[in-house]
Amino acid sequence: MNYQRTTQSVIDLVKEVGGFLASNLNSLSKDQIVSKGKMDFVTVIDKEAEKRLVKELSLIIPESGFIAEEGTSVKKGKRWNWIIDPLDGTTNYIHGVSPFCISIALQEMNKLVVGVIYDPIQKECFYACENMPAFLNGNEIRVSERSDLADTLIATGFPYTDFRRIDEYMDSLRKFMKITHGVRRLGSAAIDLAYVACGRYDAFYEYNLKPWDVAAGTVIIRQAGGKVCDFQGGQDFLFGENYVGTNGACHDNFLREIKKFF
Image 1 (cartoon, helix red, strand yellow):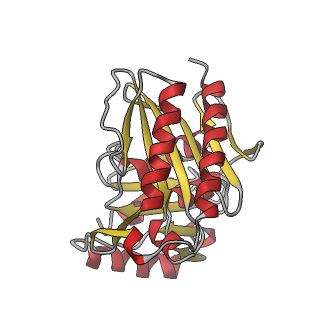
Image 2 (cartoon, helix red, strand yellow):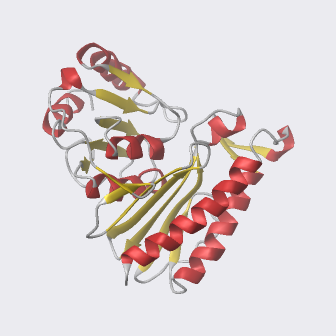
Image 3 (cartoon, one colour):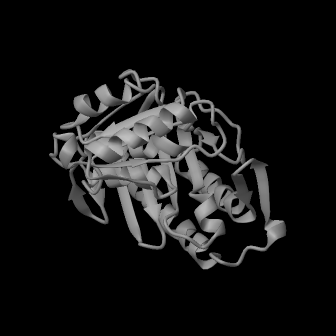
């Protein structure tokens, strides 16, 4: 497969569907928002966006399957599977707050080979594929080179449905506030990972994440020169529900701190 051509097809698609998201911002009524659980929402916009993505991605690779947040398709591909979040940052979207994005990754067997993240408000498209650099709107991007945690800016996501590790999380947050330039929380894990890839952030961590939250960002961070792992430094991050992504330079120092709390 020509990964570069496939990536371009996905870029064209996310820009089209991103326009749909942007055009419907601030148009939702209460009956168009459904709670999947405490602080976990889905809207008619999420569902419609996912339907459009599944339809067009099925044309790009007809034999592909899907791991999609809203369950529009449960088809499983033998070799190819798309991992889709049609609207990462739904709570932001409901409140008319940016950022939110579309996140799409392609998995070949057990390997992530394509990743695309699109912010339709900023019109920023982050993308990468196997054997190619990472890009933002056509310009090559690289992770930062900051290795000392005292010089870094950290990103995270606050727990919102799973509070089993809230004490450990708050302790870690307190520590990183003290030993870094600060901690940021935007409300979209996919955007956080894209920002690590382009050097705006130096590291990211969060628990209780799903494959569609991190798959695309993983490809982009890796191709931009960064590193990803789970809280123990292993590779069980896609389905293991905890994730660390860094610029590589601060990776060991950052992971050493994470392990103190989780």
